[in-house]
Amino acid sequence: MGRPQKLYINYGELTKKNIEGAINADDIDLMLLGAIMLVSDADGYVDISAVEQIERFDKTEITASLKFWRGAGIISATKQTTANVEENEERASAATTVKRTVIAHTSVEDYTNEELTNVIENRVGADFIDEAQNVMGKMFNKAEISKLVGIVDQLGFEQEAVLAILAYVVRIGKKSVSYAEKIAISFHDEDIFTAQAVHAEIDRLEKRNTAIEKIKKLYGFGGRALSTSEKKIFASWTEEYGFDLEIITKAYEITVDNKFEAIPKYTDRILRTWYENGLKTIPEIDVFLEAEKKKRAENSHKNQSRGSSRSYVPAVVASSEEKNLEIEEWFEAKLNKHFGN
Image (cartoon, rainbow, N blue to C red; front, side):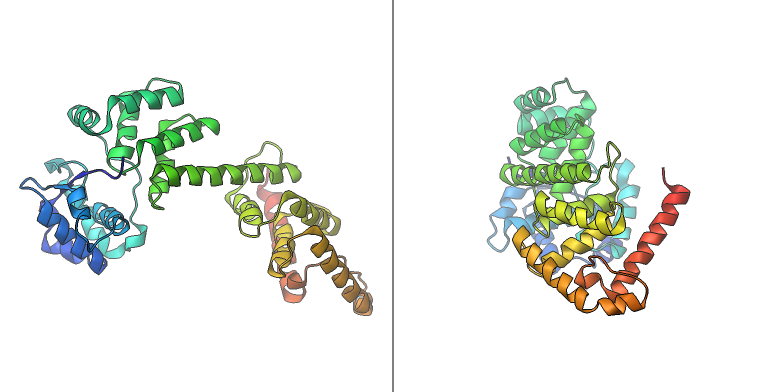
């Protein structure tokens, strides 16, 4: 199942103030809003499939524009009530300072009991709820069912894609519909909502998690949680630089030999040097290291004049950059001393 086929235009929000608030909209967004208004019925409901028949727009443009206008409060999945008019007005006026690319969902909208029953009977189906409960291994309450239905009905996820997300959260030990909702929203913001795209993204995430866990074990971090910075650094070694664990281990050993402790930022500079020099295998790295060793030997008299002997330092970390690294490490050590566990 694709994106939701029915949405509601909040005509009460189409005021002069609101139109001025939508000044950041791209031309394509304004044209699409006009097209949506033309095919809407007297109550403001619009069948999105009718918009998709207009050859001027493709599905990607429609998805992005719907995301924008929903973020601005112009379009919603349910009919606007008097109680939320003020809230929508505030959101619309805030659109003057929010660019199109950062408007995103934070959660799916809640359904009344009547709305939920109607959506399940007419658009989602009870079989989907049963299958989702089997995947999670538990019975859902009304709030959980509402979230799952919203992921399909409001965010436009294929049902198989939602089931794949639920299976993923079970595998990583979360087993929470709320956590699955957060993942779905993050995927949606990247235009990932088909079963094929979701499976591919989950496969990428699982490979990343496996690689990070191996690197975490290499560094002896035990059971402690990694910081966001550490996760980002570790992920870049396999995803951006394309190195396997053998090469990462070699850089780790060089780090420990030179700094006498495992410092991810230092290892990152070593790996970045190898990556920027196009090194992809251990033999290539060994040749590179040998060349650097000879270069250091030729310049050893400079080190001796300063009363020190250099061990391995990546070429791009030398001079001022090496000094900056040492300052970073000193600062980190001070912070850990006073605030670390």
